[in-house]
Length: 400
Ligand SMILES: [Zn+2]
Ligand SMILES: [Zn+2]
Image (cartoon, rainbow, N blue to C red; front, side):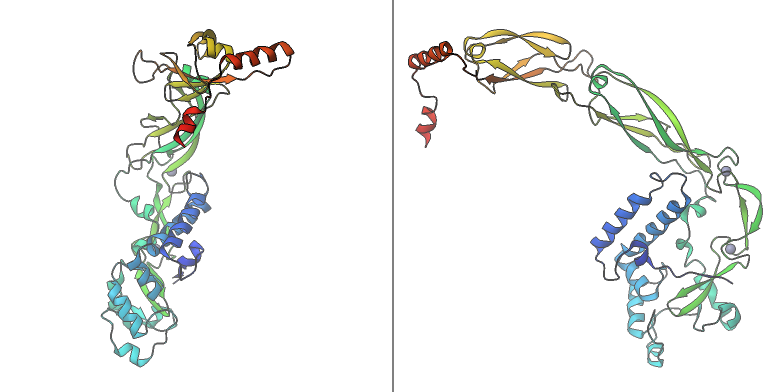
């Protein structure tokens, strides 16, 4: 009978036994990002790895579960933390000696199923009647989706993709194309994952029982994979028992005029396929709108910084301004200051949500100071200064 291996959850997450809950959380998140099935489609190794780190995180991130695991080297819902502590004081557990005193302290825990010998428990005989108590101890340690395959319909998961759209397509609308990877129901087995017929259970090699190490203790449990029958159904050769396949699919969809950066578009039923007739998930597209060298967009408004000459600003003028629809005229009032904002109503982006509504274009005036190169201009400016002796810093001096 092959023993199931002892799982070192700390090694799985690459952390020390003394790791804080924050260390655990960080280590898990880092690994989860690397091995997530969505990041590694069709990669069985990554998928297995993801299951392992999820299981390790499940136990170690829960203080009670971690205490039990630290004490016994495995986790079970049937052991409560008080028992684990009592057992720790009693001397049971990995690496501790099984002295007579330890056993006599008698932790309130049913040791009926344990086999303290170093032999395979099958050969130990006597303890058989107690093993039933531990039947479902390790059910949680095996792949959850395998258990779920026997259950009813499961809805498919949602997918999320970022779509880069250039500045003009987001404003004027258009068609975007991308390739998505999604799970589809396996056509060979119609999502069942099996093809009928049975084979020897690979977990217990047909014996119906597996051995678990609990520190120095070994004990037997009914094989959770085959439920003790020693046989499992033949997996589908196309999807290897998963019931679903990853497929790359080209996708074309319409971008509405006025689509904003960060906007989410939902395509119902375009997510991953459900299992056993479960409804498919949805596909969410998150729009990333491109930028423009001159126009800066915020919502439906367009911002623009526009240089004007000193005389245009001082005397007032009508000047041509670029808008998303081409040139438009803007009146600069006399005495306009640098940094002043002028609003051009309804020259912004047509709203994607409100029919007929449009944003504004907001022009920030930047007065360009002339480079004086000739004597005549110098004289004129000097004369101008004589005629306008007021100090623009007067109000500042008044406040200090
Ligand atoms: Zn089995
Ligand atoms: Zn299949």
